[in-house]
Length: 527
Image 1 (cartoon, rainbow, N blue to C red):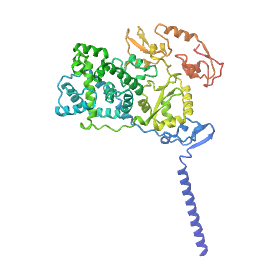
Image 2 (cartoon, rainbow, N blue to C red):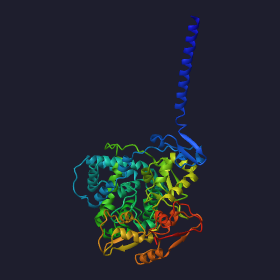
Image 3 (cartoon, one colour):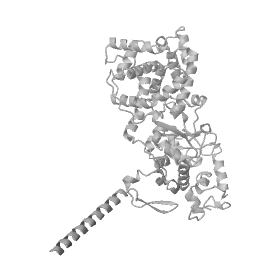
């Protein structure tokens, strides 16, 4: 009997001990799942032992760039999740187009059904007039414009108000520097509907709608990669400088607004034709049609934003604020795609924060400062891992078979006249550019072109013109071989010869790898 009891106790103890060991083993496996997911094989490579798509998106920079020297980095990015649909709606060019069209074509004299009593509007305009340097007086035309704006798509206006939460702090900072009324920030809404990539039918571009020559005069450069008229900060500073100069001329903010739209010359003509009046409402009938609607549009926008609560506008909360971003100087050419891979910031967010980069590529040019704007949550991680990130970017670019376009200043652009037998592919090949680039530069929606049509083109090789293009191509064909130099790669060599790809170089030279040695001679043609 005693033996049976002892045997039972031993058996129970053994079962309990086994169960406890199994439980501890499961706990250890569960606790170490994230730790053990990496298996370090050697000092140069990190292998993801058990691929997990959900976890892969949360990998630290060190895992993305596969640089073992960065394995222990603590500065891991956690960029905010941004709703891409929300962003697409905010920067919808349709809103810019509709606002631009209304200023040019709306019948401001036409009576509009009232949304608010005239007496209420007069009282509110009087309050605005008392606290702004603008002449915000009641006028039947202004009343009609305000009522027409109140009948607009309310959701679209609320999205615009949400977007203003990001841009207005930046505008106010620059306007204050130049002692300009902060209400001028509403001018960017009239000009571009706060779309930094907005482009008018005459070519005015950006938040403040600079023409090429005016932008150039205020330090805004344009190249094949960058259009600084679309840079929010640089264009705002240029606009502030320009507005300050206009005020020194007219000493009246209403006339400054009119001259910003139509030019100082048209305003001075209107002053002469009116008999010397400086009152905008008296000058209005002597101004161009668009300018006649421009100042009322500004004042109506000012009213809507200042009395948004009274009209029950409820804009969504902004997903990111300007002060939650930071800039980093680019030290090497890098693409939005690469930045997104290593920081976790979506490409759409990078496009929103960096609208001046036309090709989603941040170039590196000696003597030029090109900045990357990132959410503050990702900028620290980027700076901490700069060397590894740029090495990763360089290796990725060298693997690409298709070369990036060469950096070309806008003043090197040419006007090409379409000839019989021309098509976009042939023209693109002649100048070493892409068909999509030609379409973008000329606002072409399809591939159809007509004889005699003029096309604006930014050749990959600076100095190429429509006259010397064929000669330039002949020179490239004459260069049969290339001698490899220290630091060369197939990708960098392909960039020097338009029309030559990495795959061409491999094929023409029977190469199985990308390895090169200084002194090697590479064929540059099939023959």
